[in-house]
Image: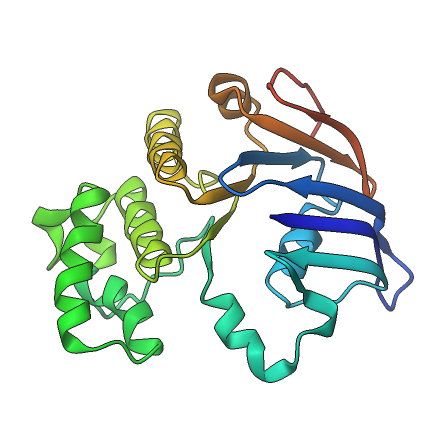
Length: 228
């Protein structure tokens, strides 16, 4: 479970990114977070990653108070989170297999574990036949599938996706969302930040709408409209 209790964040320049945010996301939920640029969406994700600390308030993830977490425990905590970005962030000089294996190597996984898990992840995202391809030999949708496989290989409890379809066309965007939905059905909590109204409307999940650092709406189904 993810809990935000009266969380606010004011940056040094005086910019109030979050204003007294309170919300709960249950284990296994699929949640969209939408809103204009500057509404606080990215700050919220950065707080969950322990990249940004709140000015006030409390964040609890699976009974762990992030504000009281010792610095030495942060890497272990982050291993329980998967992160997918708009720009894929793949290693351009390594093939698909090695990009996915990299996440395992970082945590010191055994060669046996890597040999078992990487093919399983590539099969799940539909890229088994392209394990030797370099990122630049793949389409944008395929690159994002590699990024998702890499994010999932360490079996995170929570998957955070920041504009995961921002660089993709409509068809590839929906394919990625279908994949995230299948991942969610396996029990992973999925939180997606997006500007795509079409995706939100079609997926019919819980939608949290943010504006100027506050939550202005929190509903189970899509159908919201906002200006970019």
